[in-house]
Length: 225
Ligand code: SAH
Image (cartoon, rainbow, N blue to C red; front, side, top):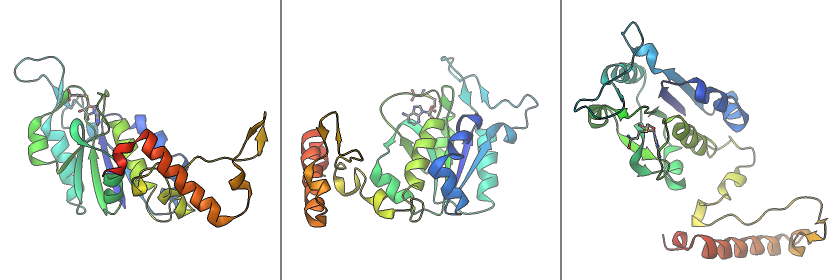
C-alpha cells in the first residue's frame, strides 16, 4: 500500500515515519509512505500557500491552486482509493475505519493548517473527511501520522506476530486483556496464577473473561455495536 501525505511541515512527521514499525513496514516493502511539501507545488516566488479569508474573519486559509496541482500530479501517476482531508468536523477515526483503509492500494492524506483550507477543495477534490477526535490541533500532521500508523500496523506481515495486532483492543469490539512479564512477583505484587499455569485453554478463557469484564466496565458502548 502507498500513502501520500501532503503537508506544509514535512519535518514534523518525517522522523515519525522513519522509526520503529513504520520504518520496518517500508523496509519490508509492505507500505510506501511519501511526504510531499506543499510549498513545492506553488508557483509563487515566496512559496506562499495561504491567503487572507474572504469575509474578513481571523486567520489564514490554504489556497486551492497548490493543493490542486499536488493532488493532480499524484493522480496522474496512479489511481487513489481515497483523497482524505484531516479535519475536526470529519467522520471520527476508529479501528473499523483503520481496518477498511488498510485494504486500500493508494491513499492521499491532505493535512490542513492555519484556519483551514478553501472549502472548494473539500467540495471538489476530497473524497473522505476524517477527524481523530473532538479537539482542535494546529495542523493535520499529527492526525495523518495517527491514521497512517493505525492503518499500516495491521497490514499482514507488518507486525511479525500477526496475531498480536488482531488481539489488540477494539478488534471484535473488545478491550484487550491485561498483560504481564517477569518477574512473577515484584514487591509482593503477583502475576495472576493462571498465566503461570502453562494451561493454554485456561489462559485463553481467562483472557476472554478479562476482555469482556474490562469492556463491560470501561466501554460498555462497544458491546452494543
Ligand atoms: N478552523 C478549523 C480548525 C483548523 S485547525 C475548525 O474550527 O474546524 C488546522 C488544521 O488542523 C485543520 O485544517 C485540520 O487539517 C487539522 N486538524 C485540527 N484538529 C483536527 C482533528 N481533531 N482531527 C483531524 N485534523 C485536525
